[in-house]
Length: 184
Image 1 (cartoon, one colour):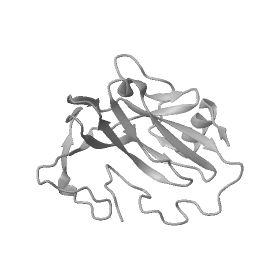
Image 2 (cartoon, rainbow, N blue to C red):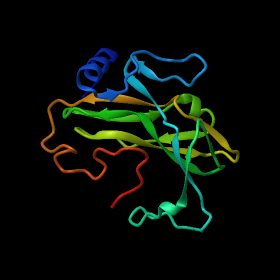
Image 3 (tube, rainbow, N blue to C red):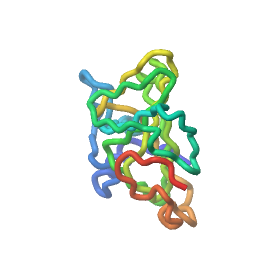
């Protein structure tokens, strides 16, 4: 498996809409950086958030998820309560090729503030907006800036295409638009 360079990411994004909208170079002036980097793509977080709230003393259950545990906000700056988390989504829509697996890592700017960005791998032939989880590990409120960099996606090419892709097995998060909560 090889990590793919900026030239491959750019070519596939422009020809095949792998990343849309696509920013072909790093944007950094006055913002948390985003766009194409040497061996990855720094995606932006959109301005729609689901902020975890425990007003009703709910239990988080991935098999029976209660969306009343979240408060929806459309805002340029999202405040994460101390020791809590929010869900967001990428501005970019991704279409992953069949022989590619994508891994995501958080931005160092957020990590240095105690904010962890978590995303599961983007599987072969998955497509959609990526739901992002921002965990505030600090005892203080923390800010997330919409339309700025949130995480970096790294693209790996397999030695051969998989027998069954995410699309082939009709994965439950296929084609997701917006912030998507757990499904069973």
